[in-house]
Length: 312
Image 1: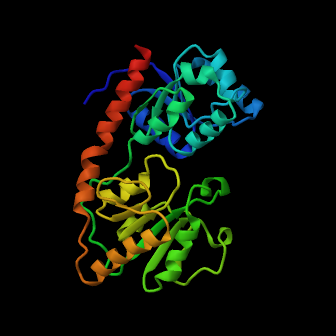
Image 2 (image 1 turned 45 degrees about the vertical axis):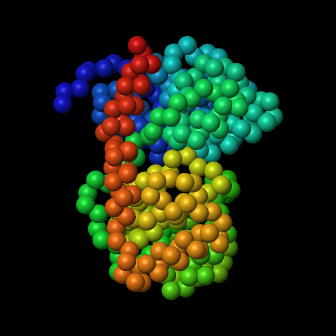
């Protein structure tokens, strides 16, 4: 397929994982897209960015603050070309806190284009006056034929290292599960032993930051993700696309919806019993759902059209 030659420059700021992914994806589609590390509240960092920001046809913020007097607010006062804010989760909680303090920038709310990576975030932003649309980020799901579930059931869990990010995770339940299920194997990423309250049970593996997620998913039967707030969870979709089972706080198709230790332990116990009885096949329904609804090329094409429309 021959793509049209475009001269549009896009500067992407914000969360590194998402920002770098979007820069690569848009570059594939002939945009001059570049990701920059967000300077936060560092005025020198913003000054260094000014030439790139001035040349950019679109500034794309993956997560943003909306409080008055923030660098984003000041930047929005000067900016006359399109600005996108793509909301992805915890950023919404920070914005809601600013709303409670009556400290929301009208400029950012009204003049930026707002997209959300999960449909429930659209509803959460309405009290701020933010009119947003659900625009899914292209998730790197696997189309390859999934490997069979491992002979020994292993549970994969996610807990970030950063204390602020951890606030929305049910760490107590995540660390209790290995102790209460000593006959099961658990892997927790990316946190390491020195960041967790000890002692660490012998059936809990802590490999730290993992780069080869395919290998990790191939050793996994069940993903457990427990949060009080979330955007669209990439790990959930990645696990489902590989035919793995998922226990998750939010209700999603072909996912076991559970919150709190008792409900999560019951759900995990049911899966473990099915596995022990030889009655736990691949989660084919979950895999089909993800491949139909989160196809990377389809979502990337949608994002490409929306970015193009900003310049029309």
